[in-house]
Image 1: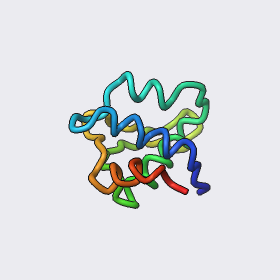
Image 2 (image 1 turned 180 degrees about the horizontal axis):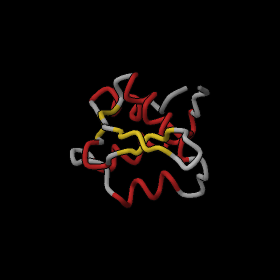
Image 3 (image 1 turned 90 degrees about the vertical axis):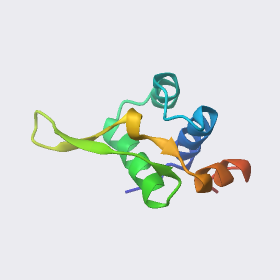
Image 4 (image 1 turned 45 degrees about the vertical axis):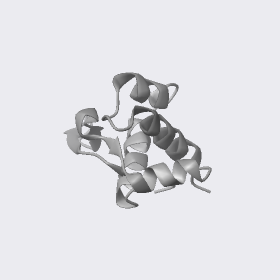
Length: 93
């Protein structure tokens, strides 16, 4: 998996705007605007969760071709204090 630093920073910035609430639909729409690869997007959320920058829940969804895509559950997605620190320090470098 390749980390998309620009997209990850966009995700964290939108989440920091929603803090202390969970991710809003508006913020998710801002993040997802122009993205055609949902799998790429969900992998960035998974990466950020693994680094401890956000908390989320994802549900695997089977595609028509049998592959799996992770569906991000916005009601379970919020930035952590570590994520806020990353945003304050100029984002992921």
